[in-house]
Image (tube, rainbow, N blue to C red; front, side, top):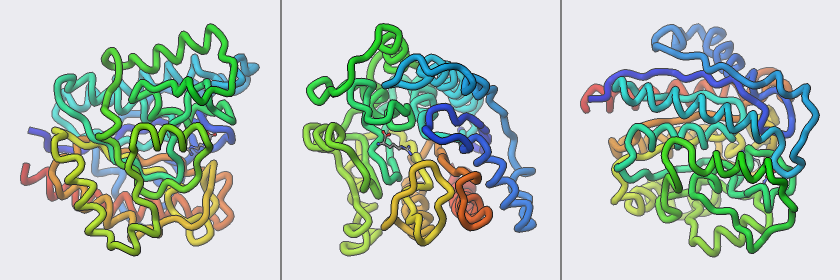
Length: 322
Ligand SMILES: NC(=[NH2+])NCCC[C@H](N)C(=O)O
């Protein structure tokens, strides 16, 4: 029986194009301290070792920057997540950039290779690029493509090096060999900033995206219920929350790739809480707070903490009754 939360602190930012999301965890902790909240003393935690010093190395693979280091880093996250699940605790991962999610998803499948995984990806971005299609070469735009094992070769624009192919293969086979989830077991919330190769994938794979206006127009409850129904054959659900799913004009620019017209924090809390109430959530992750880019002091860290605290309350109740 899974009953306690274990916080996995993964201070890694090498998958992003801008430095500083490695400090996101500390920004969230400082927000908790300043709110007089002892959240971070309540749970057991692990600090994942990082490869952040690789930032001083020359970039070898322009279309998958620092892929060898991102791949090692994901391996560490994979191990931390699967260890936590094997010791019956709930991995609550707080990461820097979103490339980490490939490690997390791989860790879940490593612990439960025979269970069917559903993923709820709350993000402004689809993160469905491969080294063949990425416009930036930043691997935080690629974790889902690695997780579903899709290169999207039809939409390729980049010539990828041998070493890049090698590490990309590593990433696609992390935790267990091959794909970690089926495309139909992925649901997006808030995706609104994609490039053409990703649009092609979304169409080809019929990926479901609940856009902000749809959630507001049809009603949040209706949309989340529908999403849960879509994932009804999944045995376990992972929620990946990128803070850029929130509206940067309303909240703050304290994230690597801010996008306007997103959700507010109350909508995010409601979406996550309702998914947790399905009792299927096995792991959750918060990513992409970058305090160095914040235009409002530590507003993004503070907002992420408000969400974290609120959804942890729901999670604690559910874990108690499991
Ligand atoms: N997790 C994120 N913040 N991803 C941003 C990705 C942005 C863009 N699509 C890229 O691949 O470069």
